[in-house]
Structure formats: structure tokens, C-alpha cells
Length: 338
Image (cartoon, rainbow, N blue to C red):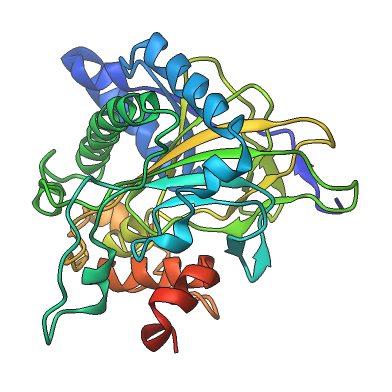
């Protein structure tokens, strides 16, 4: 790899200090710095039981150890909602295949029948696929998902306060219809020494992303000077990052940071479980009124060729799914993809 890797480390935030009145002002200043200046940070003090975090990785290992045929029984090409198992090399980032296998899981909902005039993104609403051979995966994942949602909502409320808003500012779009998303991911080790794209360079398009990673490492965050920062595993911590919807809402005061995953060495496997905090699919993000001193530091919304940021979340989400999963798009979404 030719790019320079920085020795900088990501900020660490203890979210429990948000609940302590005497530490609140100092805490909000630290969170504002981490979110504005870096866009990635560790979160501890979250209260997620250690045994649940351990169990999440245990059932992930059990799933990826199943025979390929049992994994393919829930392959995502069977799901118009892009749910289920994705085999290695079939999800794309930046137009290139990622070297990972995974399960995509969303809220447990019945599929919606599209009526004339319904937006295309309505077709993203639907059920998950679960492996019959491993029933405990569903129970553990949904319990972990509920905790990830709780922690993410608390971090979002803290960010609202750090931006001079009421803690409940973002609550409107995060009711029972919110569009959350979990990936259970295994990186099987690069196929050879010259292929290191676990996940290509990208940004996340929701509000926030939370990541539980094992001790192998590989996540890298792009610094403002173009170098890469290793997001080294910190025991008990989640990694958080800003998504594109918060960039739009803050007019670039918070920026969705580019990141990637470098494949582990040949013969080494890596597990991670990211959770993406998205609002209702019908959400349309509007700029919030920042205090003058923060507004003066806003950088504007990014305008990258090939990656327009859409304020309508459902449209943004659908574009992301169609771009990332061409096999599912070709089977179920050919009219929209064109």
C-alpha cells in the first residue's frame, strides 16, 4: 500500500459523562471536537453487557462456519430488500468487489405492497432472512441490535446538545419506522498479497454508524491531509462515525469521513458487526440552525462526482443498495436501476 498511514489515534469518548451534570459541558466540548475535527471516535461507558458483545461474535463465527449451502439458503439475491447472506466478492464499493462475506439485517417488518405513486424506496421495507440451521443467530442479533440502537440514539442526542440544539432535536425521524441496519461481516483474509480491498473507500449515508470489531484490525480512517489513521481495536469500545445525513443537517460542520477496510493477511479472518442508524425512509433532512460560532466553521456539503448527497433519505439509501449489490439490483430492481 502506497498511502501514508498516520500515527494519529482516534478520540475516545465516555458517553456515561453525558449523564453526569457536573461533567456535561466539558464532555460536550470533547464530543464536538471528535465529531467535527475527525468524524470518527471510540465510545466507551455505553452499558452494553460484555456477554452480549461476546455472544454476538460467537454466533457470527458459528454462522460463517456453516457449510456454504446452508449459508446460501438465505442468500440476498432471494430478497428484494437486500437482506440475507452475501458471498465473498459480490458486494461492490467504488465499483470494485469487496473481499468479505456477510449477512444484512434490517428491522423485522412485513413487505409492503407497492401502490401506484409510491416512491421506489418503499420496496426496501420487508422481512429478514434467518438460517434455519442456527436459530440462536436471530435472538442474539436482535438483542444486540436493540442495544446498538439505544447507544446510537444516546450519542445522537449528545451530538444534538453539542451542536446547540435540544437533545430531542433529531427524534422526529427516529420512531418505530426508523430504518436501522446491521451487517454481520467476516473478512476471510486476502486472496493474495496484492489484493487488500476488504471494503473500498466510502462514506456511510445514514446519521451515525456504530462498529463492534474484533482484535484483528483493518479499519482505516482518512485524515484531512489524505493520510490514513488505523482505527485500532480498543477492548469494550464501539467505533462511531458521522454519516452523510448529519453532514447535510449541519451543512458540513460535521462531515461524513471517508474510510475503508484493509483485508487481513492471507489465512487470517476478521469479524466485525456494524450498525447503521438511519431515520424513517420518508425523512427529508433539513439544515439545523447552528449557533453563529459553529456555523462559521461549517464546510458546506460535499459535492463528489458520482456520489451526490440526497436530503431525501429513502432515495439516498436506495441508490446505495443498488450501487453496492448489482446481482440483487438486476433481479428485483432492473426498472429502477436503469
